[in-house]
Image 1 (tube, rainbow, N blue to C red):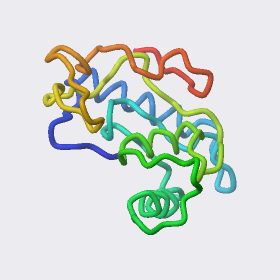
Image 2 (image 1 turned 90 degrees about the vertical axis):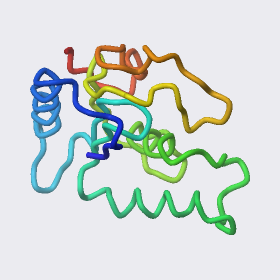
Image 3 (image 1 turned 30 degrees about the vertical axis):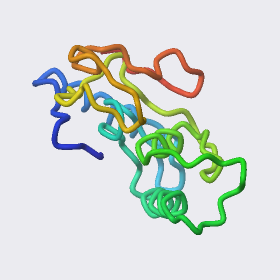
Length: 149
């Protein structure tokens, strides 16, 4: 799981709900088959959970986006790393193969102490946004399975 230093778990309840997400990820998994590639329980680049078999692929994809001389297709936009990783988990990144649904929590279980900042240029948030209990930004998407918290 990726966490930044200003994204703590939301108390014991956050920890307990993280355990429920991990149980959901393990459900249906066999040594030869990963039903779900990961989960997202926070916002930005924190709270992203990747299956270990995907880490080298994600690393390669991030390097392709970061390298100024990379041979990215002309229709592929360069984006911040957190958005690339989110898209990889959703199966919507053009350099990452589609997979099974992403597991999310209905509400954020990771707080964002530095909530006013963003990796998107020009985007600012209020102090109360993206905090514990805030509705998960992917809630309602077809590509996600929701653990209600």
